[in-house]
Image (cartoon, rainbow, N blue to C red):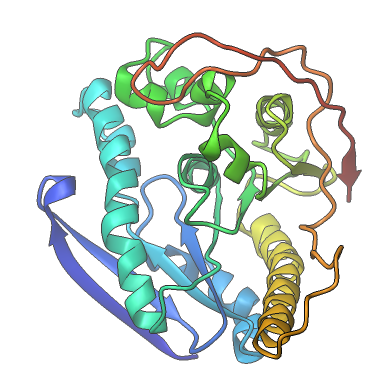
Length: 313
């Protein structure tokens, strides 16, 4: 398996040294966030790279992972939690302005359908990434997520940094507009088991928030034999990435056909769009939608409700 890495110091992360590791040669880029305070090679030590090797050998994905600098701040007992929240917000900026450009350079193109994924707190980072930047990611796979860091680490007492970093908190107040419309074109997969250490209600709470704003999502609930642990995630992620990458490949094929038709002076057929994986949005939540995620842009202005279903394993 081809492997490469780069490391640098980031001013955005208070001059912390960070590493970005890549496995594979060609394919759809997948940015996999580590769990909690894991480093960029955690997924290799935990045999996730082995589990994904068939997809990489087939040239369907290239896998990237980056050190979880923000996760280290949350777990560091000496770091005040308001500082950890600020580091979480800075980590997002670091990924957008440093990691994604590095991935584009490595792939030698700026026209990328980047998928984002993670388990546990890595799922939180995957969810936050696509909700904050739907223009930069094509889809998200979130496994056994821990999605409310304010509740987990801050006893519910949030700050501005924790608010704008948390989809559970900013989505209900996001204003209608281009950002939300773009997010509604994306697809978010939320999966969890019902075994030890799992918290299924976390996924359903996120599904409620997404569905209330009309964001396509699906909750897959696996059985009681699937714990909050790497054996579960090694089974889940290859399956879901194969599903997502298949849709990305279909969209690329369609785009190429449309481009060829335009070049030949032939109008493309109507109704030829390729849909995302079947979207099952959140159960009736009764939550009000609207408002803004950033900088306190105003009160909610509209409402929406969605129905839900779930898959089981």
